[in-house]
Length: 297
Image (cartoon, rainbow, N blue to C red; front, side):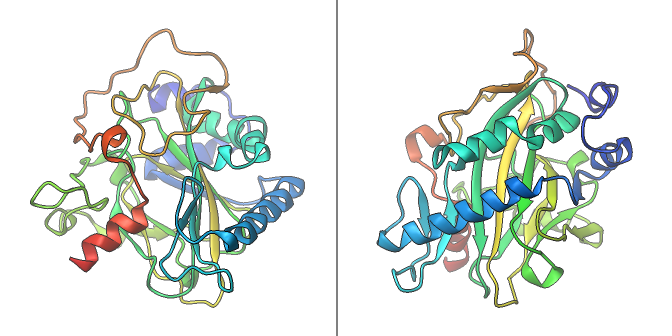
């Protein structure tokens, strides 16, 4: 759906002004939308999985582990395919207010795409360079939105998601190096065209919902506090958006309709999108491993 068609539908959760701001800037931070019962459950599940990771020596289908991870000092960078890790994660993604927020931003017919839980640990090891999401999982249109829930207060010094306002209406950049290898980040030569004076931190208290359009240029700085920054991330699209490459991190629920009805027609946006690797053949680790490899080279 187009932004105009989406905004013509009455809002379910967000204020109309918040929806209009999202479409104007490509991002949004909204407080006080997640019920306390759900927020407590997400906190508990997150901590439970950190405890479970203690027995893991290497990354697997559930955990993306940092090299220094050990039983005594667990260091989980990402909990992968979040909705497949526990039924309550899927219930939250499909039955809670979060899916209604998605409907406010992608239209009444909502399709689930993917999910993960990222942990930004103190220090500079997990900064994320400037990138867009859609080059990793291209679709027939650009309605896709990532909804994040901060599991803890996130001030500027904790490395929040930082978005360049208005960049979602600009180019979709190549996320490969000059040799054609996937880097998961925008080339330095292209970054000179991005107006970083328009970058804005998406900060907020525990439970803040952040929304980032799939074309928005964003990054996150180092976490300079002594606390881990967990954020649960869920990606949705309008029902009329269809992937044209394999998803890098599919779940058992990818493609399911969580609000409204399936689409009878595909919406085809004419804006070109670079082709990513064929993840069904190459596999995908995480943005942390890909961007770290690039920095090490």
